[in-house]
Length: 510
Ligand code: SAM
Ligand code: SF4
Image 1 (cartoon, protein in one colour):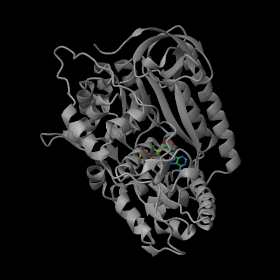
Image 2: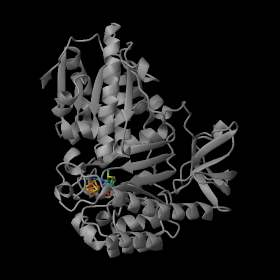
Image 3: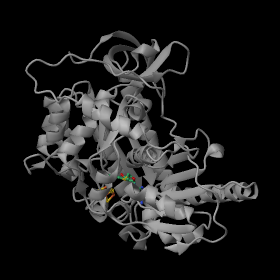
Image 4: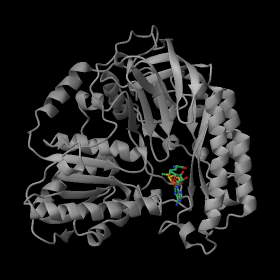
């Protein structure tokens, strides 16, 4: 713990910010499937909890949570907003209105963490101006930069009041009270189980405001230690949440209008959570339970590691119609030598075999992946192997990055680093190839009828926008009452970044 430098400021104020927050919607009602053992939400239980949370003291503090990086941070940001709203804080639409700004940070690449320090520089200036005007701004750094750098953040930027790691979020209110007394605090303990038990469930209004698609964290941390990656150091060892807790969160989401759930984890398919009988449940066991929840129409999961892609999970793509025919399965490289040096624990043939088995189970499955170019020692030949794997798989979408050496990881220690220009040229070549594949995939949907989950109003009057099973953005003519519905849509145009369609009929499970 460090002492705060400078005078203690006035009390905290709050607001929240997420751009994906939307207006409230009434949940759709659905008939039960005959013969299916449906999971029923307990309405009275939920209403009681909502009433308790809504009775929280109101004050004038405003909070803004800014989320960077992966979906795990999006989920944690929403939990922080829920937690502080329960303490009486309200959301600020803009930074200027906020009395408390939380940066929920990403440390995965150098550029991501440096961006945080430039944001902090800007906020420090705002804080100084505020103080001159007799008002304060409390600055909190959360997420992976907080976990990786701890007290160093307080030393690098004196305007920061609190540094809080991703596993300590449940302690946010108490820690904020300490900053109000003038303390500057860094809390980066690893206590994942305590985290989930200590975080409040969002109210129905909070869920509804976030839209019809929601994330649910089922697993945190990673034991894989890929040679390029900071995650095992920032998020700790793999821990899975219990089945009962996840199902209760999913039921609550469904009851509040959520139609699509994405199960998330740094290594989500390594999920092994305890069920009600004390047995270790797998991800496919979870999907079977989630499939029976009334109102949930579509299920997804991310991010998976190839070595944890079991036959049981592959088979779930064949047997569970609600499981979307789309999988993000990062491979990073197509060179066996680079994969070995990255410590990925599999070779290219292993990955191609998973793809073949997935396509046998669910012929229309679309694949997405992550690639890193310019890992230390990567030769032109290695890079050609990566392009060959991309050609062999034919991806619907991809994310690709130049290798960024991260302090403390084995890759960063190597002397055979690849120069920036080579990385740039390889990234451009890779991206040209995957872009061709993405456009071809989009064009191939022309004339097809796809189930589209409508999520929000479209850009133009009279339009609504949603997602295809393959994560493509789709818009169609329709009014806002169709938001939250899963509708059959005929695709009539395929643009560079979105598809246009005509609504044909409703598709929800009867
Ligand atoms: N758990 C996932 C997996 O097994 O691939 C990846 C999670 S990581 C948060 C997301 C992606 O960031 C990785 O798949 C990788 O492509 C990229 N990444 C991670 N470390 C990187 C680094 N040091 N430089 C460039 N890209 C990196
Ligand atoms: Fe990072 Fe994913 Fe490798 Fe874990 S499996 S170390 S999260 S890239």
